[in-house]
Amino acid sequence: MQAHLVGIPYRAELEVARTPSHVDHVWLTVEVPPCGEVLISVNTLSRLNLLGGHDPRVRVAILVSRWEERPEPQLEADDGLDYAEMEARMAVDFQLWEHAPLAEMLMAKAQAAVRIEAWGELYRRENLGLHQIHSRRASCAVPVDVIGRDGALRFYLPDGTAEMMLFKYCGQ
Image (cartoon, rainbow, N blue to C red; front, side, top):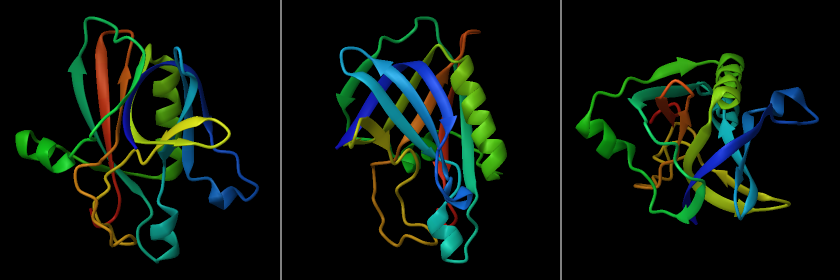
C-alpha cells in the first residue's frame, strides 16, 4: 500500500548486514504517534544494477523550499508521487551520488531535521516500515514500469528550510 508519513526523527543509521557489500540502505527511524516507530528504508545504491553490470549509483535531486509551521506527525494512505509530473512543472537537476557520501548526507540531514516526511510503500515485518523511496519507473535492471507510485523524502530543518529528495537509478 502506498503511504505518506510525517515523523519525528529518532535514529539514523547505516543498514546492518553480515556482508558489507550488501549494505545498500540508510535506515531512518521516526516516531509517528499513535503508530509508534516507523523505519524508513532509503537506497544508497542499486544492488540490482550492480549485479546486472549497470551503474549502481543513485541520482538525487534536491528541491529546496521554506516552511513556517512544523507539520504534525501522521501516517496515511496515499496515491504516491509522479516524478514526471514534477519534472514537467519545474527544473529538476539530478546529481550522481556514490554510496558512502549519500549515506553520510542522509544520516546528517536526518540528525539535523525536526521532521521527516516520506512517500513510499508501507510494509510490516518485525516493525512498521516504508520503502520504495525512489522512482518506480523502469530502469536498467528492472524492466517493470510502475507509473505514479514514486517515493520521496523531505527533511524539515531548524532554519526553516525543507529539502525534498527525489531518487532515480540508471536508465530512469
